[in-house]
Image 1 (cartoon, protein in one colour):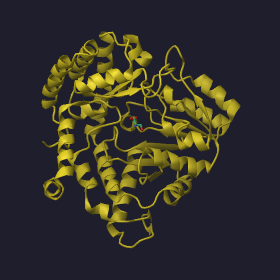
Image 2 (tube, protein in one colour):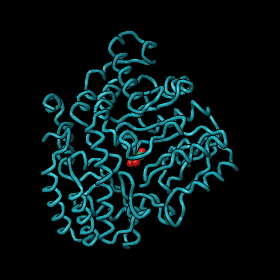
Image 3 (spheres, helix red, strand yellow):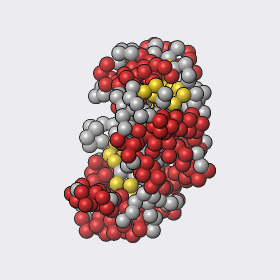
Image 4 (cartoon, helix red, strand yellow):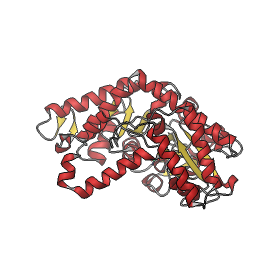
Length: 414
Ligand code: DSN
């Protein structure tokens, strides 16, 4: 930061202010986390200076002696950690990783099934607004209206009628276990590739807090910056048989040179994730989400599916006479930063939906535990009871800052 302050005080000042924000608020967007100093150091390294189109030992530029070592290490660590035959660590993020799967396995068009965005799926699982719903023929499976759980029988029926070539599983806003084995049976029955996008739950699949997608799925994709605590990036895991198609789709199909500094930071994050401490961390993420959910239920909030099995909880704000957006804005004024989100069968629009999505990965990285989660559920209830009282929200923000001061965040140096 000293170099940056001297060279560009304006950018340095903005980063400094964002550092303080990340220190002083409760970061509860379930897809965010705190990367370690080691991950940040690799990400900000001179590897950013290099171009290395291609793959280790098969590059289009010279000077790859050490870059090959970095990428091979990241691949090897990914294979070991997830039990995969092949790892492509070059996707720039999760959406490009998923796009490479479409391109590599289907080409320009094809029939795809994915979970509806409103049900908790992702844009790239076939939403009309994304390339996936624009270029591919997509049908969505969804949830049971009464329980909020995935309707596997309806998904099977849809698959038998529609005969998809590819099925996406995985979610951005679904608080429950996904039955990869059940989807595996459906995919095999109709001869479709099965893809698990585990961006949100990658760590839980390593620690055993969520069933592992292999051997039920053909391909795993994920972002590396969520629960995994790496840099902004993406990854694809598959069999040796599918590897040529996937690799060719990533480069030269969709991308140019890989971001070597990111690859190095991914390698560091994978080493960290292979430690027993990381598994303990993931166990605590789940315990914390359960405590948060219980704390919210105790304070008369309504949760989609009535609780959580993973790292997030989704409040149905309509039951409290609120919308997700107004609660998200009031919570931010009180130092609790999460996001408004669609809920299943949401009658409200995407820009002001009924849900408020809260996650525990970042708070758990700060060392917070169940007692803090209950306290935070109480603070969210206080916000909901004082939505238009700026001074009450400011008081809560002070309480939040005091709480945060006791739990320093990794990678944050004030
Ligand atoms: N934006 C991510 C999330 O918040 O879940 C999904 O891509």
